[in-house]
Image 1 (tube, protein in one colour):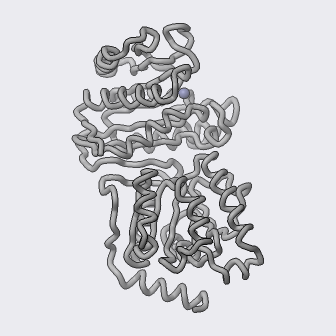
Image 2 (tube, rainbow, N blue to C red):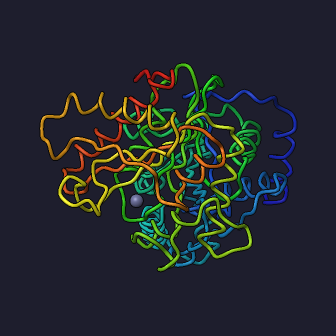
Length: 402
Ligand SMILES: [Zn+2]
């Protein structure tokens, strides 16, 4: 098939069939941020198909079949369509080793920059030979989301990876089903802020924000963990990478001197931090939430040095927040033996912080949760999860873990 025919053939199929994808986690909605870049390791034609679909979705994207890691800066989402095509690689004037190295570099860069990685494999069994599989092995463990064809999963490679790495997986029975999946992903209440919705019960909406400071890693892991449980009595909006530029640079604030957590509720015409604050704040406001939890970490225990916030829960200064905060702290502290690790309730939050802006303007219980980096990572992670769970429970939302 030549390319033109291939595309019209695909479009016909796309128009012909109804939407019936298999969703693994029915209650989980994923909204990657834009701009998007598409590339296709192995130079298969799947990238072109995705390009055609996105062109009709009003999505801000670029198609770069030979994208290099150094050109990824500025993209929030990487769509990586894997499958080795001898013909495609030959036509591009490169070889397989070049593609393998390029793919490794892309994934390394995407991981470092907190880029959302959407893996697609639509080539079926024909593109599951050794070379394609080697490319897949580079990408799959790092994917944030996978869309594949049913035939590609003949040996359950993708089902197993989905389970092992906890990656949401969409298995499509035919090419037509990809269009609504991509449409749903990018039909989002924010074009620039990546977020997830876990749960479809709307009694109580909870926002969990993380990644405001680029050097605080555990809060991001805790936020992502919230994708896993079944949420009973509400829904959780998860913003895992609030400040991708700072995460990418691996620093607290970026650009240096622009303090995102002093910029809320933000300004759409301001500095980078003010714009970003406005995008995040408006996304949150749009959900009319009932509770906000902003996840952070501090360099030192508050118990040791009052200038630091390690092991504290900072509540917005109103009756409801403080009452809930006191209850949460009392509950979690009852199981903590080490005095230094016990949580301290602090109020008010600093002006310009997300917790302050949300408490002030949306009049809902708002909290900043701070663990201390001097504790082992596993312990910090557990403290974050415990405090989140406790606050949710106080607000009538229960988590049921698989
Ligand atoms: Zn922080």
